[in-house]
Length: 278
Image 1 (cartoon, rainbow, N blue to C red):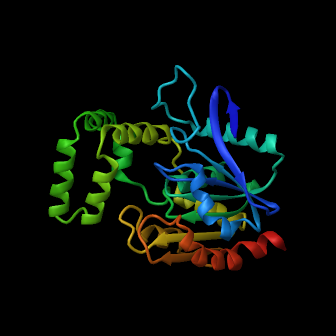
Image 2: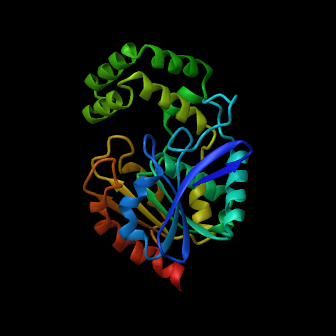
């Protein structure tokens, strides 16, 4: 399905039999269908609207707009409100994995009164990344980022040096090679990082909103995640234990495999479903 707004095309799928709407956002390099993997944990309580991020699946910029043009917070809020109006949704829950977690937290900060619950899986948007900020916000960093897309050899040598010095783990080095291994992937990283560079939620505000609006949160991180390690869990969870249930899964960054439904469902049954169904 396609939702069009001001020339932008936002692709999405819809599944589940529950009465509660759940808006879901995937991570880099994935598509909306990845959340089918968690249908066993979600489908009886939620109707899921899973979106393709821009430059993924069927979500597209208008012709004539640079692929690296940032999505502004105002535009993000506007298309979201238009979509909710179209579907007749007043209040809703949200689920985000990795980059999608940052989009979820951004949305919560823009319309907190409409959020019923959050499901966050290895979410971005909790701990600020120096390298992401440098590559998308700093003028010199932007130039170097574009050069890396053209000629990544120097970048790979730098990552290897940082790994030898102990600043980068072996797993992170392998992840970097996987993400920047060919030109098409590097160009996608460039466009996607820039597209979402202005959606930057602040963790202090996120925690304050969760507290003020009494929003239940189920948070999942991977014990061996080289990208968004368990430190992000402790940052969001600290002082919020009455509203946030944090579960560390015995895995790396990929938390969207069907096998994890058995670990995810009990947390939702304890933290999320009682609040929605009361």
